Length: 230
Image (tube, rainbow, N blue to C red; front, side, top):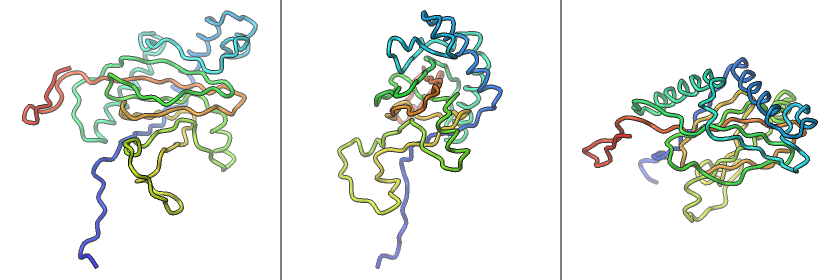
């Protein structure tokens, strides 16, 4: 038998979970609902809370990617920066400044989804869940269901041979992770991490805000030949 048996984890992927206050969550949702009502060309459909013209058979709506410039979202931008610097503390990194380069909202009606993707040209990405009645309902019934945001294991994408795992599975060899994201949850993760949104099964809308963060200032070390100023 070996004299030493120690399993080490050298390259963990950080995904930081935050619970945002109900006031900020509601205020963010109210801004989106108001905008959807005014922008929808189908006035009858617009009266249906946040319809995005169901007559066109659209089940996933994505806004423009510059809503961080909207003064109505200033309170949320401040909250995102607070989360970003907390992420730095939690991961022991030193970032001089962050800049939001893109920020948009997603509205999913029944069967709305988003395919596998990642976010290029950014350092961190985030998802803020404003409304997901399906997850919240099942959580209150003490029968939690996974959220519909799926993260793909980057190791398994490198043509790694996947072994059969014992119950209840292995965090080292799982192909993906589906966290339970209730309304009011904000997560930050590396932008290179591939993810997707599976089909929304609920009758009510699922509403999220997504965003990208780029670091600004000095990064890396000259001694490691990776120093750069953004």
